[in-house]
Length: 366
Ligand code: PMP
Image (cartoon, rainbow, N blue to C red; front, side, top):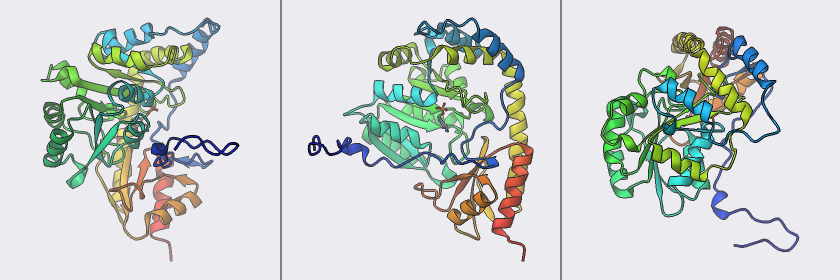
């Protein structure tokens, strides 16, 4: 269908009508545990350095289109070359560049569901054919189903989220190597929560695994670096992949303030690691608290936990928590996650409030 009747609304692309709102509501609540952000702000010293450096930033000029200083700093951080690093406005933009460059009409992307919904959503927006493979027991990649889907669809991209949002587990390196061997295109490992996990696909790359030139690792500053408000993500991959992303990125897509903020943040790696350790300890406490309640919770290698209330429907529990001013993610309508909710690890006080509210919602005092 083309344009609508004269004067009427112009119809959007029919293939976009299938897009349902992925977004979590942004509600004014006391305890926000719905979008996997860091509950702690970045270090004060970073904020001070940024404030001072901003004074000298020539904001009347376009930013460095190639983000050279930031890429050099990230390259040093990961022990790679700047030509192996591409940065974007959040890792979502990086994922979009990958799909623009390697997906599109006539090409296929494989995902393992349930997983991070934006892989499919950006696939759809870019006109990429999507093949989703249901995960198996414990939400692990189902190897026979994966092998069949990869062989049949010969995808240009295969996405795997590790640790997987929203189910929590990281993929063991053997599984990633196995997928890399069987997929003809890029294996994109979304490590938005990578620093929480016991291992990284970056290690496989560094070890020169077979097919390493097709292995792409995507990271973000939004979670472990506590900078979701800045919008900075990047990938580490073969220089050919970086060059392909540069082809499709808009000119000056990464603003000067973000480039500066990211470069300065890398000086606070030790603080980031300490924050990650604190959150992992809190996650364990949260998991122990959930184990005492009538819920099924899945093990997590990230800063969130997926759980299924066993005594009341998930939507009612979500609403009950909201009535206590605690916001979690309602994943119960996502395919494969019927009855489930996801909670982000917060500060100790926030986690206590969540656990107390959940206990009241699930086991009301008589
Ligand atoms: N990947 C995963 C797995 C995520 O959970 C998120 C954020 N929810 C992103 C990518 C996008 O993060 P950002 O665009 O903030 O970098």
